[in-house]
Length: 123
Image (cartoon, rainbow, N blue to C red; front, side):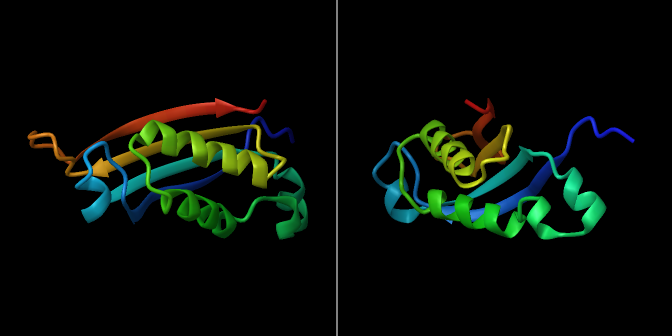
């Protein structure tokens, strides 16, 4: 059996944070929805049932939560920081696929949210 790809993912992670260009956004905050998929080889964990052979999604959550807690004007910058932190923390990561959606953004439109998506590969 040959594994073509393997990913660790967290779907629809909801966090409250203080990002935005407008000063008010960094005061009142907003809800954000994140979807994260991390390419990593966890074939050893598949055969051994050992956490050492994979990346703990609980640890991924802690990394993402810490970066979301740092206020930024742009979600693009937040996305960069999250990806960089994931690559730095987990050496087996080969790619990160990240979506960040800000719920009810202050732009006068009737929409569920607005945000950014990025696919980043290892250095």
